Image 1 (tube, rainbow, N blue to C red):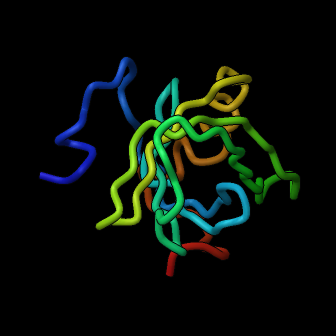
Image 2 (image 1 turned 90 degrees about the vertical axis):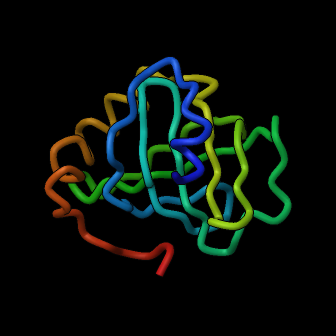
Length: 120
């Protein structure tokens, strides 16, 4: 049983993230899963320094538009062993979900994302 299965108390069902590359603050990460309220990510540089309740931003590059969307988030879970962070959208959550659906909604299930920079 992995970290997210053990702590599955979410208000919304999760979708596969397809390991899409993104950034949390200045660190590289990959999207593991997402829901209507937040995302689970794996941080390349590890989770040292992350604390429950930390407020930060997540930046997600769109390969379709070549733009970057930035969403404010709050840290809700930290798994140091697997370099995983569970974060909740604090503002613009509805826009973040729409962005994720457009970006990885169908591609993640098929595993057809482009890799780019992130957890190697």
